Amino acid sequence: MAAVNATLQVGNISRAIIAEQLSQRESPHVSIFPRRNRIRNTRLALGVAEMDYLARHLRGFHAITTSDWVGTHPVLYQDRELQAGMQTVAPYFFETVGARIERGRAFLPEDFDEYRPTAIIDEDLAEQLFGDRDPLGERIYAEGRPYFIV
Image 1 (cartoon, one colour):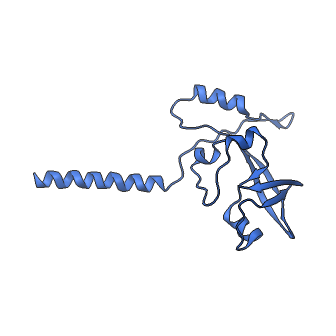
Image 2 (cartoon, helix red, strand yellow):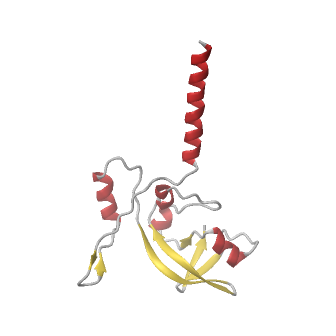
Image 3 (cartoon, helix red, strand yellow):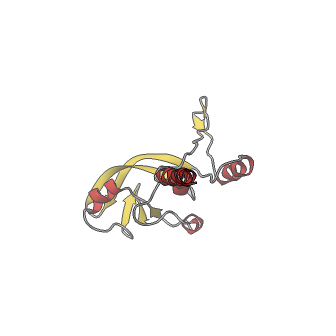
C-alpha cells in the first residue's frame, strides 16, 4: 500500500512540476500571413471581420488576434530620440501569444473602442528613454503622434 501511495504522489508531483514549467513558457500560437498580390504589390489586411470569421470557424483555439509590423521609426521622449521597432496589435494580443507584461497593463478593449493613443514598451526601450524613471503614464512620440505608456 505504501509503495502505491508513494508512486501516486510522485505522479502528482511530476504533473505539478510540468504544469508549473509550462505556465512559465509562452503559449503556443499560430501566425497567419496572407499572400501578397505580386502584380499589385499589396497584401490582404486581416481586420475585425476576418478575426470574427476565424473565431467562428477554427476549433481548438483559446483566442485569436491580429498584429502588423509597422517598421522601425524614431521614438521621442523629451530630449531623447531612439529608433524602435513598432507593431500594431489587436485586443488580446499579449494573452494570445502568451507574452508577459512585466509592468503596466495590456491594452484594454476601451483603448481600441475609444481610439486611445496608448503604447506598451519593452524593458530595453524603457531603460534607454527613461533611465531609472517610471515610464508608466509618460507620453512618447512616434511617427509624430503622442502615445501614453500603459
